[in-house]
Amino acid sequence: MLRYFFKRLLLFAPTLLVALVLTFGLSRLVPGDPVEEANAEEFERSTQSEAELLRMYRSRSARMGLDKPVFYFAFHPAAYPDTLYKIPFRNRREVLMKLLRQNGNWPAVEAYYESLGQLKKELQCMPVKWNSVARSSLGQVINTLQFSNDLGVAQLHLKKMAALIPQDSMLQQATFPTYQQLRKSYDFLMAHPQKAKLYRPALVWQGFDNQFHQTFWGYLQGNLGQSYEDGKPVSAKIGRALSWTLLINIFALPIAYLLAIFIGVRMAVQHGSKFDKRTNAILFGLYAMPSFWVALVLLVVFSNPDWGMNFVSITGMMDLDKNSSWSTWLSVSFRQLIIPILCLIYPAMTVLTRQMRSTMMVALKQDFVRTARAKGVGENEVIWQHAFPNAAFPLITSFGSLLPEMVAGSLLVENIFNIPGMGHLMVDAMGTQDWPVVFGIMLLGTFLSIVGLVLVDLAYAWLDPRVRFDRSNLSV
Image (tube, rainbow, N blue to C red; front, side, top):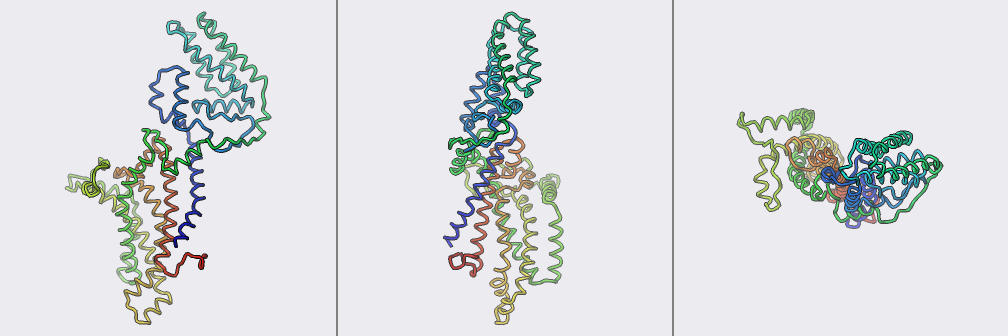
């Protein structure tokens, strides 16, 4: 049994690795600049020069581990540089990439863009008392040109610069030499295209000091990164939300299973009776009612003080106090948790009950059940010791999928009742584009799906003694 458990874990390791690679890849494909999003307020408040902003960006990028290559290797056209990831600000990298796709000469593109940055730097270094209309107009043209990805349009902006600079003697003295260098860089770029490199593939080894390697080892140590929203560790935010999600599901799932087992078994034993027909009709009715609609109705009814039923607070659950005991925590929150738990119980119970009824009806018709009855075995023993273990396998299989659903959070219920669980955290993180939290929850859900499958297999062996996971029965 123990040997089988470790074998299954080894088999699931590649699945978890693939999930990690896919999650990491998606995290790098989402829109926006992670460094800017994580330090949005600091960049917005900053009144520093271009050079100071670049230094600030590089410092934050190094702190977040984003100043390294993305993966162990890169497969791209030969025209692409190996150090594109080091260029500050994602929007600038995208502009450079679009310029490169038009020309193919990376050194010339880089020289042109650096000359443009140098011109902007010198313009910002001019004393404020030398401000003029020409200087303001030139600054606007430079800003526009920095985000222009069309080389044809860039030529028009360069002509505008040539007309603006002579209008102010101080401006001409400070910026004209750099403008000439910018113009030469542009002319060289246009005169020496290398488009053939865009169609020649190149495989580049980037070493082990990369973002994926750092992320992978961080995940193994329980470090899921930092939240873009508040800079807190993602693992801490998920752990806090997980406490609430587990709390409501620790009550909901066992109750749903117990009700499903006893009601389903009774319906199967009394197949065709009034109890079976009426219960079946009730289950269909419950299944047809959407959980979000039931949750809203119960919230309106039980949170209305005019009806004397102010049992639920719509202002949200209390924050988890780390110093409080579980008993204190439950006693304070119990009244607010009853209705959310009910909203989680009834959808799962309706499906599991009908599943239990169907499999139990099949089990009761098997030969071994008829043989047990013929030997004089009591009816309760026939039902619970002979038929039920065989009928319970589908319920065990269902648990494998219910476990990740439980941890991923009951999105609707948690958001309707404002419970700060995993579902609530996922919606908030997606709304604020806090991608480290979103992908951390996704990866946790994948891991628990694998754990659920292992637990299901172990439960099979425990429930049915005929199942043996050893060398003599490797086909099971």
